[in-house]
Length: 219
Image (cartoon, rainbow, N blue to C red; front, side, top):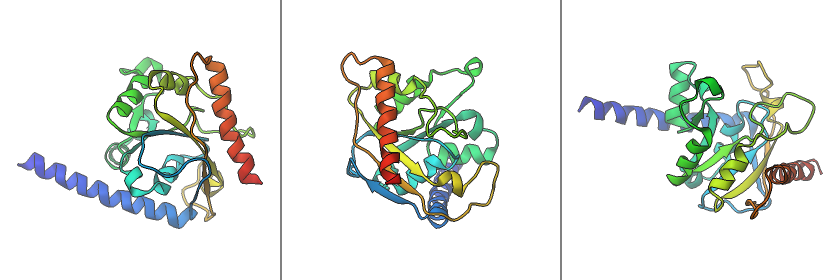
């Protein structure tokens, strides 16, 4: 009985905190979603985006319609989100994140298998193929191979590029208080891995699709 009550309290707390986080994100960034290549439909997808801030997946999650948000799981760094009990609660219970250990020597699970299992469970995913925050002058860092291997294992799932503009200025690295600015998230046309497409060609194509959204946003 106590265990069931505890689970109910945790679920209620997670729901309240989720609403508070989305409200804060909307107040701080006034995010605007532009569905340039796809419609916000209830179908399984892998949303992949540029990565310049720890708030990136929160913003994508926030602008998704509630029916999509409820079934979309961010892929996030286990070593970051398990640093404290509060972060662990937010990562696991609020966002239901797929927590990936970025330290190969400490891993007990294969990251691609974790993501594939989440897809098999019916979830959509938010992931960042650069693998780390981009603090360089380049618009994108080279993509890691995880997106390719996931697309190979689950070729029937659409890959949707999402370009996030301005969030690195709203929440610069090392800052705690956000600077109010309007953020734009542009969702591009869905992609899939072509038959026998080489890894390098696929990663170049998916990166180019993301950069094309940046060019359109700048225009």
